[in-house]
Every structure is written in C-alpha cells, then in structure tokens.
Image (cartoon, rainbow, N blue to C red; front, side, top):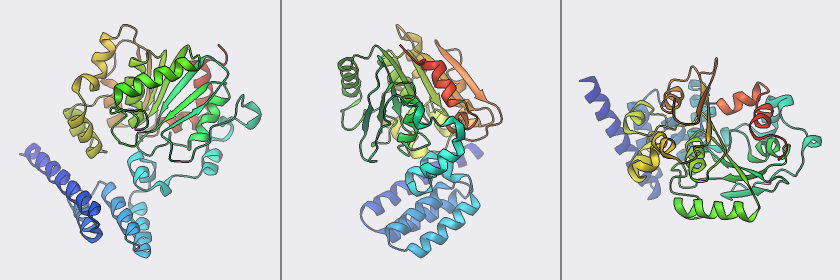
Length: 340
C-alpha cells in the first residue's frame, strides 16, 4: 500500500510540475506560483519547489516577497545552494569566484603556474576552447547549473597549469548531453564534430571530466571518443526507472532522459563491457551520500572502472571536496601528466 501511495504521489507531483511549467510558459505567473506552492505542500521535504516559487516571484517583479521567500528557504535548507538543480534555477545562489578562490586556498593554481591563458566565459557559449601546447585534450561536461561547481575560467586554471587543451561543453537541453550539444547538433553529430575538431588540433590523447549530470556524459562521450581517462564526480551514471525512483533529487531531469534517450545509449555498464577499448573510468562520490553511492556502485566491476568513495562526504559535492582538501591539482597531474 505504501509503495502504491508513493507512486501515486510521484505521478501527481510530475503532473503538477508539468502544469506549473505550462502556466509559466503561458505567462500566468500567479497560477504557476500556486502550483509550485502546492507541490511544496505535497513534498514538504523537497526544497526545489520553494526555490521555484522564489524564481516565479522574481519573474513577476514581486521582489520583496521573493527576498523573504528566499530567506525562509535558505533558513530551512541551508545546504540547498550546493545543489546543482537549485543553482540552475537561481544562479545567484552560487558563490562568487572570489569566494571560491578563498575556499580553494593554495589548491587554486596562481598566475605564475599557468602555461596558457585561462578561458573567458560569457555564460552563453555552449562550446569554449582553451588551446594548450600539448597533444592531449580534456573535454569537460558541466552540470545542470552550466558550471563545474566553480566558474569555468577558475576551473580552467587547473588545466592551464598543465598546458592541456580544454573544451568546455554545456547542455542547454538539460538532458545530460544525450541529445548532443545544441551548437554541434544531435548526439551523433556532436561526437563527429568533436572528433573532427580534436583531429584538426592535432590531439592524440583525449580525456573527459564531468560533474553531476555532466558525469554520465563524460562516461558516454569518453567511450565513443575512445578517451584514455574519464573522471566523474558525483555522477548519476545509472539511469534506470528503478534508480530514478530511488533518486528523486532531479525527478523531471531523469524523466526527460528515460523517456527521450534510447536504452542502449543509457546503459553505460553494457557499453563499457562491449567497448573495444574501454577508457579508465574513475568515479568520485561521497561515501555517506546514498544516491551518489548507489549510482557509482552500479558500475562497480565494469571494465576499466575504479571507485573513489570520499570519506566523510555526505553531500553531492565530490568535485569541490577534492579541491578543498588540496587534491584537485595533484589529481589532475596524476591523471593527465604535466607533459606529453
């Protein structure tokens, strides 16, 4: 009976969310706000609906109400700002670059250590290239907030220090890059154009890195581009209906993938098992974060896969934790080397 009730509630929530989105698209902000608040009553422990309500209030010009709603939401869910899905809704909850640099401390490469200029990011481009002097390149797949936890130019300093070519990718379709990158085409076209670009630049060794939703893309594209190494941080690499029902953090995102992406592309374990040359896949996740641990364990024992549980981490921030503990610079040097 409990299982049936839970399923009925999930179905009702999905329907209400779709109705709220339709109302917003139609310009009926009051109606959309009502539905999001209703979702908050149905799922009182899910912070995403409260932040959707803040977003709608902002769009409606009700700034004082939005400010108070934000204050209450942050008071109730103080860690919500670290969630990529909420950062995607309200980019202003992201820490500033200066705050990130202070938090990273000595792990953030200084100007004197850089072998090329870091990328510039206008926030709009879905493909950004930082050209290094080596014949190795790293493809980087952002999460739902279009970042890699920290601003992309700040993250690029770690690659510029190693003189690596970096290609940063964003998925404006919010479907885990499984439908490709908008400016490059669908999935197959994106693979083909990235491959052509790498050959044009004389790249001989490819690596992929992805955070959160971008982590499964790093594995998928890493297989198809015959990458040498794949690094996934807090990556939802097991996308099945059973897993989606267990991991309700980004229910609508999972539903889009499960309903719109062929199962043979989603089954990363099978693809690794059948790949002629599977990459070395390294998955980093919070040992005490149940959903991220569940995803990682789904690939345990697959060809080339190594799991790296981070002791004491109960949240979704495996990437930033690696940097905070002075591990990102040494990790990238270990994985990608400092010369060809």
